Length: 524
Image (cartoon, rainbow, N blue to C red; front, side, top):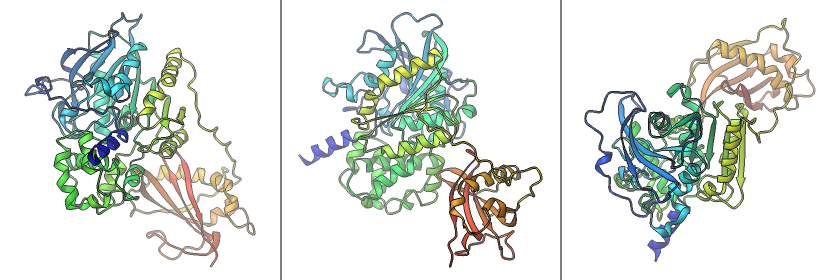
């Protein structure tokens, strides 16, 4: 009875968009030709028509060319699906799907047997019925990548952002290379959970990976966008949890992809289980870790243990300006991807200038948000196709504050750019920072002494130190302001513990051009 309860708990809390009960065997279709054919990413290697359980939907397995992390050609598999009805004038819009966590083994590929779940599994757990069929029935041609390493052989790409994004953009190219489905020029991308992580990286890296692809909309459902928060949610309570297995899958994946040493974060008991994760799918992986405490398997926190923390930062999506409007759905009852984490990510996307429609579904959990948000997502897509202005739930930006210091005759600020940080800011970035700094300080005058002149009037008397830091994978410039600097301030960081607002520091994000974390010294 105890083992059954563990499996049920694991299945219900799964970080997935599909929960397979019996994984099919890998068929000869998934064996790539050796050598791979010459060609470009997205070129089709082979396809295979498959049966569906819906007369309105036709589908094909596909194998296409892609690239691994080192730029080497590889084969990736996936699924094409399209209406059986005749296409409208101009063709169907293209809808690319990135699936949630399925596992790390080849046999976990969703395209292997997408309509093979037993009847009792129902729509709640069926990847095609929840994530593919509704969009095909709405008139979209769908492509759903398996990702590198699932289906066709290859290194795991689980939560490896650039590898996931490469699989997605090349799947878009592959469907556009498929002669049996007529397409128009519209392209949308959607992902749930791990798939949300994949789609966030696709949007972030699109201009680098596939500049020819023009996106018309980006949809995320419960995206795994805040990796540090997700891992901390597992480790800090140190209680048995189905999600411990997901965190272990990340360790197994990054060990493969980046050759990270497992013994820097895992205990011997944790290391012993890793080979099994590479051979099994998500339900078995979760069950293997569901009973023990995280501390049985982890002895070091990977969010703060290098080089794991560096890889985590690199694989955390950055809140940059995306190439298309954004729709984000989140279940308020989600215990896997915390609603607060998604809200933080949405707020950061808003700060970067994106038009974001954020919908929170009160009664939806991690899996249920897919179905709960579907009608809203389809309505949002219809409005994008119609050319309507994208809606946004982002707060209106605050009106700019004009600082009295900023004037053509104002003297330049005296500063030193230190080279002992994670990176060295360039002069142009510092010039832009200094142009924006007075306005930010004027907005925060209440943090400075009311007995002295306004801080923007005193700023030319300060000496400013700058050095580069990395925070959650973002480049941050640390600003240290000193009104009475010691000798050698131009070459070494200065730490002052008191002295009032004669000393203050803050951070500047050059990507979003915003300041944060202003800290003013107290009086001793």
